[in-house]
Image 1 (cartoon, rainbow over the protein chains, first blue to last red):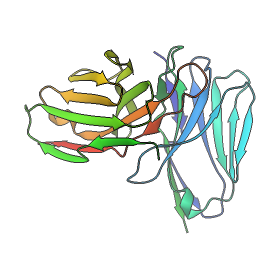
Image 2: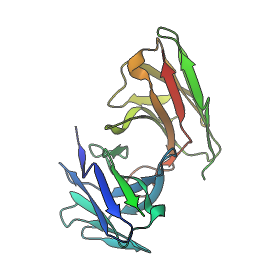
Image 3: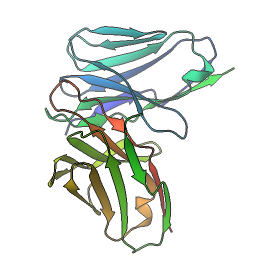
Image 4: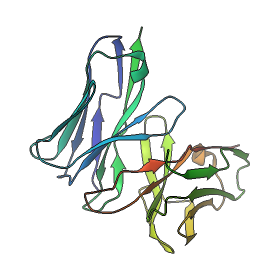
Length: 111
Length: 115
């Protein structure tokens, strides 16, 4: 079945540095979603991208959907300690609507 | 947060015993999901439901069963718990299928320990 691969698994940064996580699918996705999970918490929906080449911004977060709709990235500018958590991408599985999650990237921000 | 309640929030059970986890929603969303989360594996789908009495298997369904007799409730049952089922279980709901309105809203999670 479809797999959504996410890298890196972990990322340590100093506060103020930038951070990027990448998501790659073996098949074309109808959409891609991004979630954030704080330590000890539950995943929280951040955004959904639907169009080829789409770019969306939320304050310091920039989300991109690749032209072929097989990859996506989340970039955080000037990280803050409040950005700590695990970021997941999710794409529909096998043409269905069921979100298939990547393994996530855990972001650790050192003050 | 969306109106999703998972119960219990924590449970310790013995190997071989049956366990039922409950997910209750007040959003009237059609789709409900059970995921398990383990270190290094992210969120893996156990079972999902696309309507009352309509359920299907996910990628890690062995050892689990589900039931949905009402729109608002989705039950996950471990018929005979094993130590490999020690995990954090998340229920999620979504409103619609297709490309739109498919974002998932998660419950707070249930931490299950099988000893």
